[in-house]
Amino acid sequence: MFPVFPVEESGKIRGLNMFSRNVAAIFGHIKMPVLSTINQFTTKHLAFTLGGLRSLIFNEHSNGLANSGAIVRIGRKVLINEAKFFAWVEAQNSKNGG
Image (cartoon, rainbow, N blue to C red):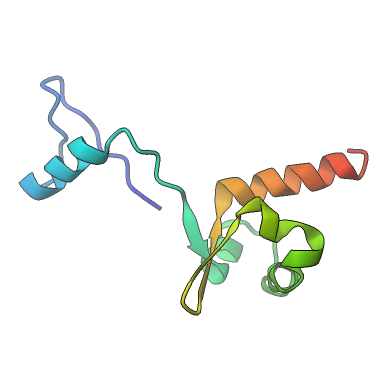
């Protein structure tokens, strides 16, 4: 998760060193996705169990999760894009008449 820093009236961002201020100023307009590991995700969202989430990821090609872009792989690390995952959950809800 990426922190949000308060902005002073002068436009400076409080709580950052000079390098971080420059980076924040350059990339401030880019919305960074919230990426979580499976363990972080299940700790944060208690409705999803570790085994249940792993099952969804294992079957991602048959349940449509792969097409949603919610699962991000970097080497062996599996990350979940939270916004895309919950959009996929909502799409499953509407498919089932919800």
